[in-house]
Length: 284
Image (cartoon, rainbow, N blue to C red; front, top):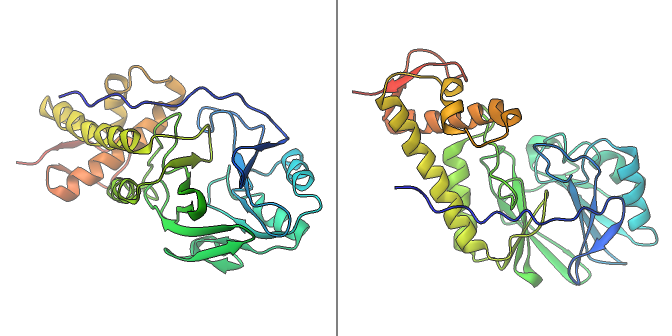
């Protein structure tokens, strides 16, 4: 059975270097780092105005983006610099920004922040409350941030509207990723704001299709192995024929994540350590 198509959100007009008002409590400054993994670029979110502003996912090491962020918060008090996870398009600017504005960096303990965050922690400012939602899978330290006043989730790279997320072992874990999807589905958010691209404004159908896609990929991998042993890299051309070839190495890593999940379940086996070239076969 073919999973329902994911209703991707790709209608997005980039506005670089300026603070764009999105909701009464949310602004976004977009870094000019478009690419096959970042879509139009890294969207740094500013939550709140004036007396207490949280900056979420400061972005890549980019002097122009730092200048744009500082211009956007000029005359305001930045109280928190938040990071969803440690990838190079999210974390590097956190420390330079924090030092420039005199605010602490807050993130998962694995990132050695000034203040470590754990699931369920709450951060408050003038007119806003953020609750930490642990969403490992894309990265083990991945955190989402729920803006309670708007019933919205800043979903980082766990859920992106424009594409599926890469789950790349050893730090990426498909079981954890799917568990995190279930958690976000159950929470019933009205809107998801990914770090890349536009919002997901009808989350439940989107998340349902996203989960079905991942489970469908499990089934495709098992069907491929029913035809004979194979490796993640060898499966990519057939299973990702419609995907940009630049993404095939990352696709092989996601297939590896599926195979590790299937090996845990006892469905497949391999004779060597997991890698994109490891040959897997059906068990039994």
